[in-house]
Length: 67
Ligand SMILES: [Zn+2]
Image (tube, rainbow, N blue to C red; front, side, top):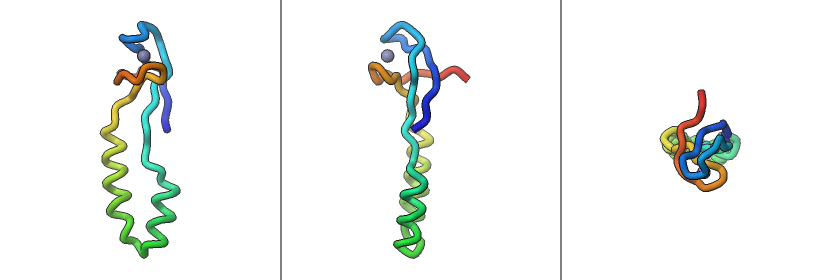
């Protein structure tokens, strides 16, 4: 899970924002145990995680993090 600071319009202040990411360690191990078959699931999970929005850690509203 990544975190960054962002302005939340609901909390009306600067908050910590978080974003869920694919757990590459777990996916890597599962890929080994399935003789490489799991790599398909891994790729899909990585793409979905990339599309996930940043969310306010207090109220869960999607926010734009500061760069
Ligand atoms: Zn908020």
